[in-house]
Amino acid sequence: MNINITGDGLELTAAIQEHVKERLSKIERHRDQITQVDVVLSVENKRQKAEISMNVPHAADINAEATTDDLYVSIDEAVNKLEKQYLKMKDKAMTLQRQRQEHEKEVRETDEE
View 1: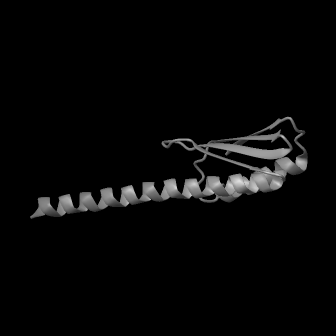
View 2 (view 1 turned 45 degrees about the vertical axis):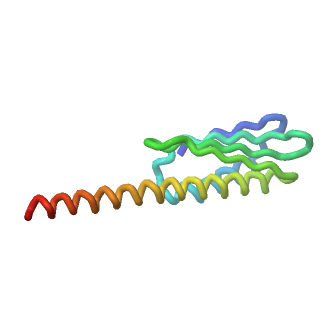
View 3 (view 1 turned 135 degrees about the vertical axis):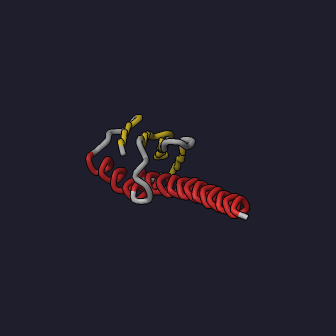
């Protein structure tokens, strides 16, 4: 997983970068096919904003953002939102795969009769 972290109006410290990578590793354990993650951290009117975009092959990009008074909380909330969306997408894909397999099995059984 390739992670790009960009700071808009704030300095990216090693601690911030490590926190982002640590939190994103939580999502990576679900599936290793995540190719690209772009993180933009910014400050708007003393509010800390985290925007994350994740690229998964053969699926639509997943985006999440969170704005709070604390940058670390914003990162955590955005990653949690991203994880929920990712798990929902993965669950839909698995359900479709199971339905296809069941349909193919029914077709084979019908053909054998």
